[in-house]
Amino acid sequence: MPIAAEGGRVTVVVITHDRRKELLHTLDRLERLPERPPVVVTDNGSGDGTAAAVARRHPGVRVLRPGANLGAVGRNLAVRHVSTPYTAFCDDDTWWSPGSLSGAADLLDEHPEVAAVTARIVVEPDGAEDPIVEELRGSPLPRPDGLPGPALGSFLAGATVLRTDAFRAAGGFSPRLWLGGEEELLAMDLMAAGWWLVFDERLTIHHAPSALRDASRRRADGIRNTLWTTWLRRRPVAASRRTAGLLRRVPRDSTTAGALLRATAGLPWLLRERRAVPREVERRLRLLDAAQRTSRARRYVG
Image (cartoon, rainbow, N blue to C red; front, side, top):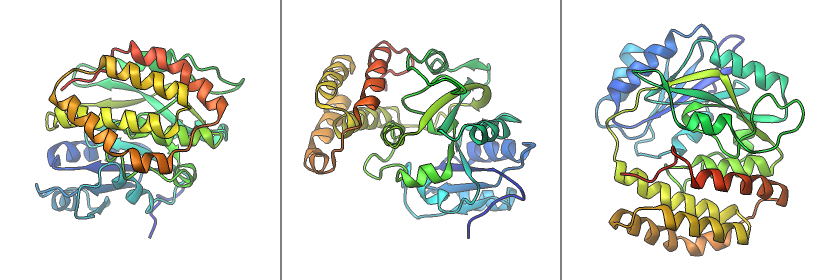
């Protein structure tokens, strides 16, 4: 049964895996928001008692337990239980500032051409802006008159509010990609369907990076997923250039070698499922390629 708060417009969706302490902190923060959003958590196969702890401390939160680590597909599962027009994604180590969810809902109410709005990210405990914010703020993409903020070519799942119906129509996150840059493929499909993605710095989300992460796994998945997304959606010349640029930037070590092997092993299904974006979307994406090559925030480390 889908859930929605009385008169509410936004449901918060969180995925988690073995981060009980961080998740409970995030849920404490969400519970204090003036919007009082309903929250759905997908517990991706945690072994640390996460689900039981949430049930005790936050009985109003719906917890889904698929019994395995579904990665980003855990968000797809959670969105099946959403009946509000908008879905705010949130990681287990991020939380929304008071008023930001209602601000995002107002923006989406007023701009029916926008599918997703990404917030300004501040890193705790110091409150400094994440380096990615300056790139979002300075996005080189052209935008039509009236678009409420800088146009983006992708979004950050832990800091974005999306139209629930647009997310579902685009198919959600790909099971193939699991986690690590999984947003880019969905963003391209939303753009191909005619939607705009924007940044609005009036909205804020806080990020207290968890120490419980496998940096090498994250890097390997990020390299593989960037290549898969490029080969699935970019037009041939752009795909070749982006692949060559990525290969020049990544560290030359065993983590990268493993990621490249996994990427090339996917070629049979990539060729079957390849669907290049429209030329207008490709023109926008090319404008982002140079900025991504020199990015301080998009580094392959770990």
